[in-house]
Amino acid sequence: MAKLSADSTLADDLAATLAAALRPVELLPAQYESLRQRMLRRVRAPAPDRTTTVRFDEGDWIGVGPLSEIKILRRDWHANNQSMLVRLAPGAVIATHGHTQEEECLVLEGEVMIGEHVFRAGDAHFARPGATHEGLRTVTGCLLFIRSEIPPELARPAQPGGS
Image (tube, rainbow, N blue to C red; front, side, top):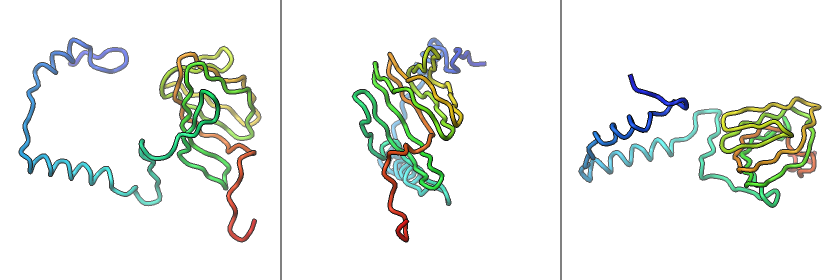
């Protein structure tokens, strides 16, 4: 059985042994192009019905503070919530704030603190409606996935029919 480290990756010595045993495979030009085209078709395939896909390189990062930026993945104006990536550079701070809706936060990279509560990659945090938590701060920098309410100060799109 393969030896795994605590984070479920191959131990360095086993990975090195396996890598040394591999031999490169040379593809004929036609094989290479066929494989390339099959991969591109899968990557470019439309999202399944009634779903939306946002690719890694799609969308724009928007600066929202001197050391912070967001990338909106989805906004639901009717439910007044959004999904976004939040990237905080080392030293970034987000002010204390409250919630009128539940907020979900998953740390993807780095480390962030809310008060003295520390969150690392893989940790999830949930704030219920009515919760106020101390400001967030990061020493290392971090990447977060957040699902939250749309800020009330954000301009709403015009509704069909004028409302």
